[in-house]
Image (tube, rainbow, N blue to C red; front, side, top):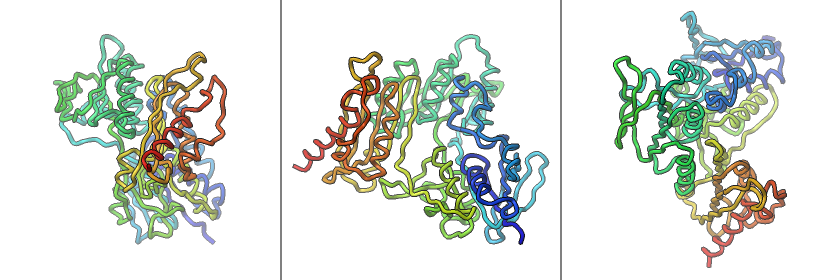
Length: 462
């Protein structure tokens, strides 16, 4: 009997995790695996790119978990620099373009995995394609940015403008600061880090100012300014003009699903592919999808959501590979946990913001506390702010946001577990968390926030 053929579109986290897991379960005589990747690299950490650019990570190869050669040694036919340009669902085949030779050809499949990732938001504005304007989604992007930095040299005052103040924006602001640039962050929103409520985002803004990063809120970019040589010279906004030797785009990403859309596959409200818990594309028995191109269930809000994170992508790939390989796996959903930092400031969130809760019809209370990440008397104790959101009447935890110094961000994991378990804030107050002065006050800040939120729930019900 001829081996079944699995075709994987996309050679990074979700795609190659799926291929590798399927190969563990079925050998090449049972399952032929063909994977297509349009770039130069595979199985790498895109989340590590800002730290490679900053110099914290020494070499590009440190971000690569598995090379094309290593995948091929595991009997995966990985075709690099080859882009899938069409999905023929009815004919069960994909059209591929070899970017080196220009040759196009069709490859049939028995099972298909779509792992096309996400693409950076790049507004159609004058000058956006100018030399010196960089996105940072792939290793190729990171290398192009480093090449620009080398071309600029280290002499004189160098100015970088970062457009966007989300995770990538603040991380790239730090990277440019470490590279010796004067940094301006242009943010269209009310405060940086729109994944936080504005009151918590204000703390991030104040800390960035203290680091010497200029943050301009409410600034919509209207044009990238260029010189006679076509290189970027500045950024124009509706609030003014800002000089720049280099521009980094950190506006965010959107699902890369044009192939899926053209093939008639089901997409969600944010443009991501819709799947069941087995990561099978809705209505298609032999097509799976995972990674940044899908929407998954938000367990707190109860609706599909696009959350592009490498942690999810790798889990998606494991689930897909298990199911393709004859095993069994599910991905039940997420609670929206994420952490980041800018220099020594740590930022974390999980669950819903106030506007998220309101958007799904939940009534809620909030509580914010200030504490320290260690016992106040212990050397190195620094401020930490925790905001907690709970459902009115029931007290069910809905979300937590944390801004503080070293040792603050990973406390959000306690809240992520509580959200997944559907705990109330009152139940959280009894959690048996570890304590010693170098690690925490006797009442951990998350528990202090839970106690204050319990009081808010009770007060709202009286």
